[in-house]
Each structure stands twice: as C-alpha cells, then as structure tokens.
Image 1 (cartoon, one colour):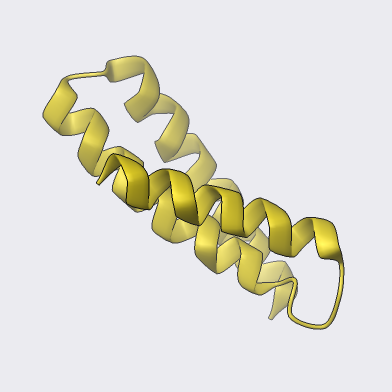
Image 2 (cartoon, helix red, strand yellow; image 1 turned 135 degrees about the horizontal axis):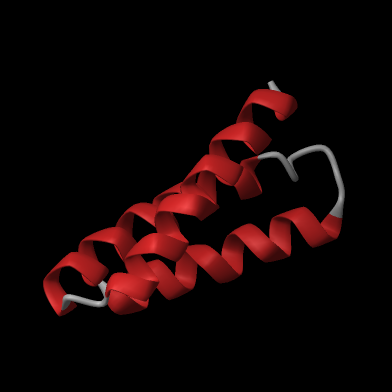
Length: 68
C-alpha cells in the first residue's frame, strides 16, 4: 500500500508538472494516492498523515472539478 500510494503521488506530480493535454489526470492519480495513504494512515494509526491526506483529498477533488 505504501509503495502504491507513493507511486501514484509521484505520477500525479509528474503529470501536473508536464502541463500538457493529459495533465488533469494528475489529479486522479493524486486521488488514488490519497486513498492509499488514508488506508495506510488508519492501519498505522498515523493521525497526522491521516489528517493531511483527508485534506489533500479535498484538493484533489477540487482539481478534478476544475479540470472537468
């Protein structure tokens, strides 16, 4: 789960940084990453990480809404 979350986070950042036709998919990649980190945070009882990822989920959803 940890590596999946990290990989989708890097993919999301790369897609947004490339700033091309498919860059909006970076928000979808971030959303997958956020979900994985939330699961990881619950399992690890990492409340700080959990709080951060819930907040980032809202920014990912907002980005998706703006993109669409």
